[in-house]
Length: 290
Image (cartoon, rainbow, N blue to C red):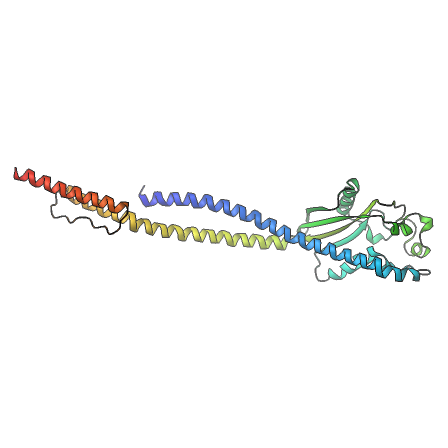
C-alpha cells in the first residue's frame, strides 16, 4: 500500500469516528432543543389559560353570578372560559389541544378522554406533583403534553360540594347526575395542553442532515487539501530522491544532486543523500585510480 493510500486510510478513520461522535451529539442536542421549544410553547399556553381563569374568577364571575337567579351563565365559570377561549385559538392551530377536564364534571363537555383520565389519576395518586410532562403517540405523530392539577377550592364547593347546595339554575342546565361531592383540596381534574412535535422534530432532523452534509463536505475538502500537501511536501521530494538513487545505483556518473528548497526533515534526507552521493563518487574515483 502506497504512502498516500495509508495516509488517506488514517484520515478516513479519524474523520469518520470524529464525525460520527459529532453527528450523534448534534442529533441529541437538536432533538432536546426541539422538545424544549415545544415545552416552552406549552408552558406559555398554560400560563395564558391560567390568566384567563384568574381574570374570569376575579373580574367576570362577581358580575355574572348575581344575574344567575333565573338562568345559569356558564361564562361565569373559569373552566368554561378557558376552554372556550382556546377553541378560538384552535381555528388557527387545529393540532393544538387544551382542556380543563375533571373526573366528575357538571358539564359533560369537560369529561376527560382515557389518556387524560390516566393523567388525572396520576396527579390524584401523587398530590405533591405540581406538573406532569411526557410525549405520547397520536395519529399526527408524537405530541408533548404538560398537565397541572386542578384542586377543589372553596369557591368551587358552592356549586360542586353537595347537591342540595347547588344553584337551581345550574341544575336546570346540566342536571343533577354529575359534578357533586367534591372535597376541599382534592385533585378533581387537570389543566392539560398538548402540542404536536412533528414540525420541530422535522426541523431538527433537517438541521442535523445539513450539519451531516457539511461535515462530509469539510472532510472531503480536508482530505484533498492534506493529500495535496503530503504529495507536494513529502511524496514528491522522496520520489525525486528515489529516482536519483536509482540512477546512481545503475552506475550513472553525471547525476545532479537532489535539490530541495525547504528546511524540513525531507530536506535533511535530501542533504544526507547528496553527501552520500559525493562520498560514493570520491570512493569510486579512488578505486579507479588504483
